[in-house]
Length: 211
Image 1 (tube, rainbow, N blue to C red):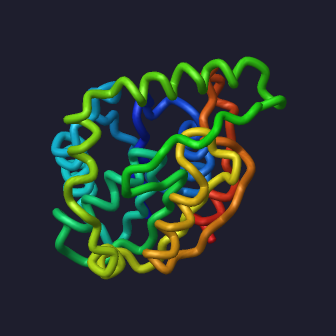
Image 2: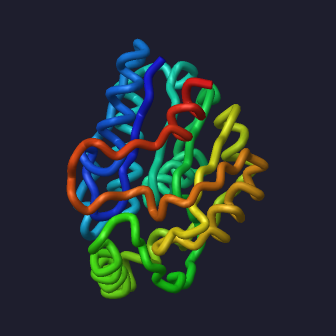
């Protein structure tokens, strides 16, 4: 089994819970591919979809490939399954902090367990608000046909935090409802760390992949 991990905006495959997840999956004998998505500071939908499509084609066996996305990576996966992919159904997809429609940033909550992250999140939100309108709109111009998405993947799990300061919990719950998928609720913010340690974990994602 191969697992494709698609990171999000302002991210890389070496950040957040991705290195830990990759290590855990490889220890279980799985092949893990985490491509670097192009220009993560100014992500263009066409470029990200092309990169995901290239990764899927390189694997060569979608029926033995699990898709994992975080934040903008989840929207990339949804657009890919909706617009581009035609083939045997993927066995599983895990969507962490997912969304697929424009939303208003939620109130910034305190994060007492990680001192300093409140300010980091504030800066991140400022960057989101400063993104060119053309870049933002491009991700939302094509509506998601959730029926088509479900035809292309047999099982889907959404994971979202009630205290996510970037993507409101209501957005992830709405995506899960449209997909008729399982929804795992956490209280772990946006599942990111601003100091890259490689120690961040997300056991619920691992369980959703390995069963």
